Length: 296
Image 1 (tube, rainbow, N blue to C red):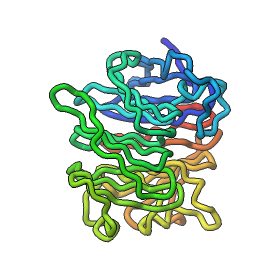
Image 2: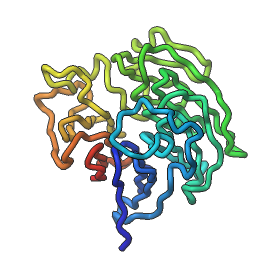
Image 3: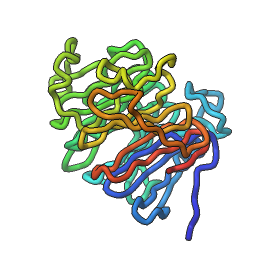
């Protein structure tokens, strides 16, 4: 058995698709795990290049000794295009071959700061990147050539993007930001939806990851300043929602109308939990710990 692990800084990157989990961290490592066999499948490097400007710093806090071009906080992948997306801590987004993580297809360089979230649309013909430069960068993926072109970059919030959801028809996105805003965008027509929150409950969302909003006040313990929740994940069946927090807990809430007093909390990580995801069949939950660098 080949044993592999993350070993430096924090581990944030987590994505699940079709039975496989992919993680990335501040240690210049990308790893794929078979969720059924729990075996390491393959891996790759975030970068094998020296930084052109060694003095350049990232705004992402870490204890890693690796340079920021060898750290990645967001990953995702698509079976349709057989691509892996790796967002390094300088903002560069690298598109890789899903069968060979070290085979680079192209680089997307519009983001000027590190990216906390990357998510394909349900149709997988768009890729949305939420950056700490306060922008959403949306790319169109050609169905024939599998190439990427910038479709729309937009900033409406006053702080960084920390979560992003698509509607199931791939026409709209919503984001939450570092100053607790929830913003809505019509991707099809490239329009900011000033009153998007009023109709949000009537739309079908492919994921449920935004951290703020009137429908999730029950996720917050009394006395907390709302920064302790690192990630949110809703089930496809839409009957529960999970949070990953600074206390090392994965918390399960009823949905809709979550209530902290009715939540269940599960402790396994020794430090803050950075990410949590749910399998599409609602039978498994995966989490990664920031400082403990552990996939559970």
